[in-house]
Image 1 (cartoon, helix red, strand yellow):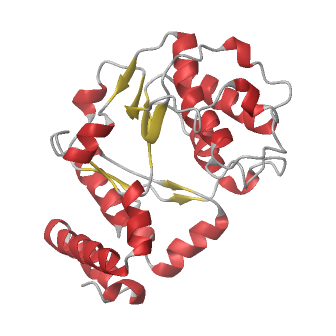
Image 2 (cartoon, helix red, strand yellow):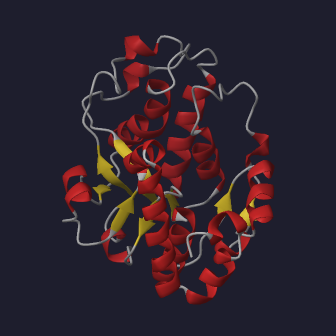
Length: 256
């Protein structure tokens, strides 16, 4: 339901959208009847991710490989993230943007010694005081920087086939390296919001991210049911023709 709102709202407010995934995900979306959500198509380009990538530790590696093949200017957006308004004005004066900065918490963003499974990667090349950038939404206006960042992140992931932590290695590759690479290249960076604004709604209605709420919905089915019904209501209101197709999907029909 969130995926549908994310894709349809992006198309209404910000232009075309595609889904970059692997063949298994493409079959899944087609089998559900949701492939119409992405007007620029579903592209199963991720089947070629090298087998030496540790899929357990680098569970979001697909995002980095997708970004490596999509030329800038482009926006990468998670399927649990909804953009309710046009972003062009917010992105007009930057080379890279992300939804918000993150605090450097040692348990999430430790020092390089804690990433000892990465062999041959030059940690000393970067400024470790720069606050990471959350990539639930990330904009790349500079194609040269997009290539530099994805090349660096992929090099790091391939240097750690035996990575032993399922959080710290991934968020370093995806989020901390983004900020570090931007600082090193001296590109213009914008944080579109901050965590307090996202939580209390003072970000002027631009964004919804269900990241933390998904865990609460897993633990309390009534929350999940209520949320899905609210999504169905919003889909019927904002996208009535599309809502008819979504309501025909057996696993979702109950919420309409």
